[in-house]
Structures are given as C-alpha cells and as structure tokens.
Length: 300
Image 1 (tube, rainbow, N blue to C red):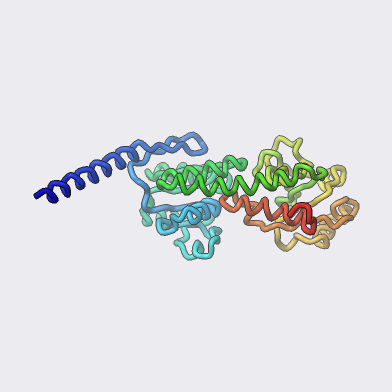
Image 2 (tube, one colour):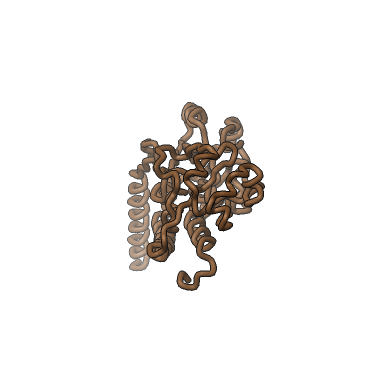
C-alpha cells in the first residue's frame, strides 16, 4: 500500500512537471528579422527551408529528421540533397509545399522574394524570415531556430565555440600591418562586398581593409577603372571558372598593374562558406586567415 501511494505521488509530480513544461512552451514567442512575432505552443515537427544557409542551420542543430522540404541549391551536408525539392530560391512549387504539410517555413530576405513571402502567408502557413547582415545576425537566426525547437543551450554552446575561434583570429590579426582587399561577388559586372555585409566583417576580423568600405551599398557595382585607382593589396574571390589570375587578366587586362596581381595575392575561397550566412561562418573566417598568412610560424 505504501509503495502504491509513493508511485501515485511520483506520477502526479511527473504529470505536474509536464504540464508546467507545456505551459511554459505555450508562451514562446520568437521575433523574426522583419519584426514579425511568431507564436508556438509546441516545437514544429515538419520544416521547409527555402535557402541553403537555413538548411545548414537545421542540420547543425540536429533537426534534419524534421526537414521535409528544401531547395535545389540546398546541397550541404550531402544528405540535404536527398530532401524533397520544392523549387529554387526564386521560384517555388506552392502545391508541393502544401502537400508536405509544413509546421513552419524558413525563408530569407536576400534569397527569396517578397511575392513568395506574401503567397505563403496568404496560404495560412507559418513563416520565419531571416535577414542576417552581419555575424550577430547570423548568430541570431541560428539561436532563434534553436529556441523554436527547444535547443537553446546547444546553440549557445556552439556559438561560444565559434566566438572563441574568431576572438583568437582577431588577436592574431591585431598586430599585423593592415592591407587593403576587395572581395569579388561577381566579375561581369564587377560587384564587390560592401561594408554592410557579413563578408566585410570576415575581412576586418582577418586584419584587412575593404577598399569599398566608403560605399553605402551592401554590394556596390564598380568600374574596372575605379578598381585600378583603389589598387587593392589582395583580391579575394570565390572558387569557380574565373578564379585565377589568368582569367582575371583575360577579362580585365589592365589589372596587371594592380598590387594584388603583381604580388600574386589572389586568395581563392570556398564559395559556399562565404556566400551562405549560416553555421559555417567561423570556418570561412578561419579559411581566409589561414590562406592569408600560411607559412607564418608566429601566427600558429
């Protein structure tokens, strides 16, 4: 009889805790990057992501089993290629998305269109909008997704490790002579990463001065002649068919006068790491720092 009473008390405590947990989660409100307050009474079970960076965040948080749809460009990690494709970044199949019965859809400002957002809202779907403009923005999106799925502690630990790595790189870069650089987003026309971008932060952390930091635009277009005037010490370019000195000079022969070309300071980086504001951002910074300073024993 005594053991029966103890068992009943234990069960009552367990049920009470469960109710408190559910009640606490019922109050969860997450504000996305365009100011929308999104309410949750329980963690979503079916996710669609409409950008590679968001797909990577879902995998990094260990939520891949909940991912039911993503885009043709969501190719990392490898398993992300096997997820049902609902379109590319600009064009999506709404019928397919509805059929997948998502509890939440994650989209981005830069990668997706306002029309897509409006249509999803019209269909009554729950949408979270991400718009990271800097490293803090990348961390916010990651942490917001973690909160939604009750993985805040895990996310904070991950972010702490990323911050630790970045702080080490900052310290190592602080005593180096400042060199100028440009990060080429596109070559025809010449589009560079400006000051209001996470890429610009990557350059600064590694001790570089962006030659277009005076531009108010995030991704300004520059003439080939203006590049000559600004004459960067380094050219940083994502990997691809035009990422060699030969290809650069084929397109713009006069660039042979640039300091970066003369000194063969062309840094080729992983395109996905640098273009996707997701959980690989610390890898991108480490990659750039390593390529800039490889061979220097005082930095290792």
